[in-house]
Length: 235
Image (cartoon, rainbow, N blue to C red; front, side, top):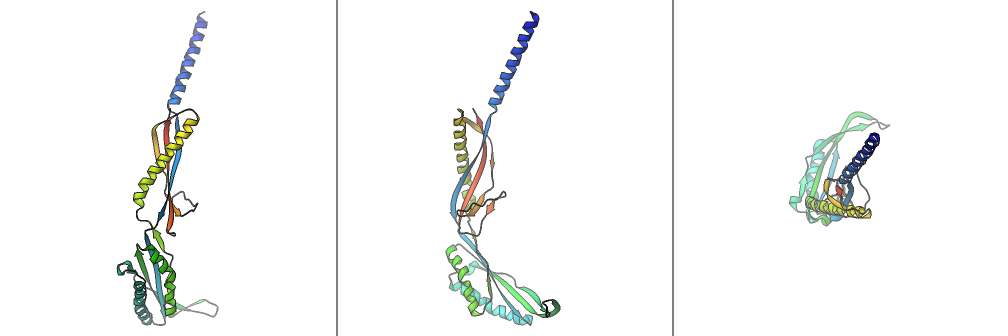
């Protein structure tokens, strides 16, 4: 009789223990969802760089050619609507040129000098400078060896957009969590934790992503995507 009572007590204790563990587990149930938001933005600033270079047997001759032609380049830019304050000149770079042998080998013998100076245009008139970057090779017809680089397009209001994008991504995460919880007859509770993902700024309609984030400067129109991972309690 005593043995039976003891066995029953053990079974009851085990049932209570299991029930208690189940309740704790349910109370700690969570759901982790990822929300995202995407927005199309248009660059409001452009940075365009170009350079001119001249070679001559004597350093002085190369310098004179550069000094004469850089003002011509500047005048050309002004004629295209670029403002004086948007133009910046770099320091002059110099390089020695050595003669080559019959098989293309470097003889080490000095044959001349090469001078190069870069010019940079920073403007909020994106369309104007974009067009200028394509047309600036007209200077080659004037005997000026111009090397033009692809423009860089920047969106300066990124900090403002980032805050609203993260808020939209969080709303999306909540909506997803509510749908998942409802599908199993539950409801979501409070936020247990939230983690912001990296920001992806890609060319418009691009599917490119990077684990460390992207910041495209090659295109005028871009897509900005923000991602937030949120852990909700489930009840």
